[in-house]
Image (tube, rainbow, N blue to C red; front, top):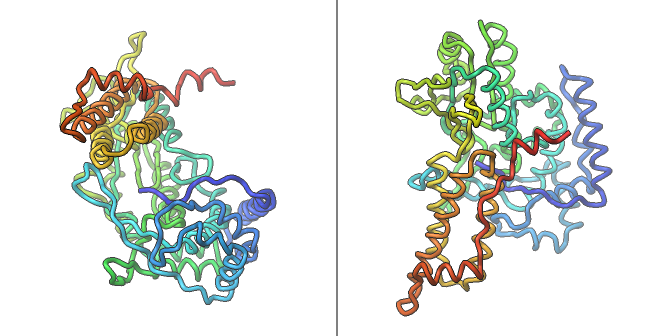
Amino acid sequence: MGPLEGKMPETPSSETISTKLQRIANQSRRVSNEALTTLSHYIDLPWLREAFHRTRKDGAVGVDGQTGAHYAKNLKSNLQTLLDRAKSGTYRAPAVQRSYIPKGDGSKTRPIGIPTFEDKVLQRAVAMVLEAVYEPHFLPFSYGFRPGRSAHQALDAMWKGLMDLRGGWVLKLDIQSFFDELDHRHLQEMLRRRVRDGVLLRLIGKWLKAGVLEDGAWHRNKSGSPQGGVISPLIANVYLHEVFDLWFEQIVRPRLRARAFAIRYADDIALVFAHEEDAQRVLAVLPKRFGRYGLSLHPEKTHLREFRPGVRGPDQRRSIDLLGFTLYWGKSRRGNWVVRRKTAKDRLKRSLHRVHEWCRRHRHWPVEIQHQHLVWKLNGHYAYFGLTGNSLAMHRYWHGVKRAWRRWLDRRSQRARMNWDRFNLLLARYPLPPPRVVHSVYRRAASP
């Protein structure tokens, strides 16, 4: 599940905006047990302009069909009108356009909601305010969709924690349809504990009730926040900060017999316990805790597994999957047990399937254009999966891309067959970048 916004170059107003964001964060720290009542005044024309520049212009269009380029043609007027409507309460949140993306192995799909471009800009503006309010209070083990934090940091924290404990009992949680089942009433109560600004709360309420447009029919949302909305990841973090993070840190951990820690990336949660008894006790109360807030755990995908060197669980597995990687015990060059990481089998299979389908659909494109796109795909894969110790899985992906490309080049013409000899000559002219380690533990260790 991911947002549609991206990183944009800073604008001349960024320094002023940064000062305002710092002011909000400092105010939030000073009154940590009180709600902030005056926040919407920070959202002015320069603030909206910064939100516009932070919003992706090449994303999918919403129900009005308006693109970022079209909106930019009359930017100042559009932003001023948007500001006036947002502040006066006359802004009407448009329905989101329902779309579906492949999920897992491609046999299932995941629904996402695509807001209009103007709605994305306003959501980004509000998210900037709320992020400054909540960031000082989010806990260190929360990594998803937060500034300066990443999935790789979550993986590193998991690795360090497991190595420090020398393994343990790993409880992997799977929240069923989290973004669809998020309870609006509970969310609004949580927001009001920290934010009492009527303008912001009113806008969030409108987005939650905007509904979705699918096949020309409008459907009302009784729960949930559409994946694809700019503000949805922040809302998810606020919700799970209350439901899980604070509960685990303040209520659960002090009552455990031995050490334990948690890692959360959005709605992907893993807990590690030194003692099985602690793990079993927490597992027993988790359904009740999540059920109190309208959420449920998937009975088959939520599992407890012993993860120690040389130990196999009842299912004969001694590995755990997290954020697209499989973590398992292996021996170092010195013969010591260490936690290793490799691309998860299902993620590798899914990635190769997508490349295979892309090559099939675009086999008639000019070879140089195909090559350019495949280079982008390979570099993107390495940017995420290029961890120390994952070379074998990356080489499998690299060879899989080459096989898929040759296969569909071979099928685009009955006359000119693309056998491996010809394909190797083509690769000499259009080489595909080999695997490389982007996130090296050795480079980090050598850094001062």
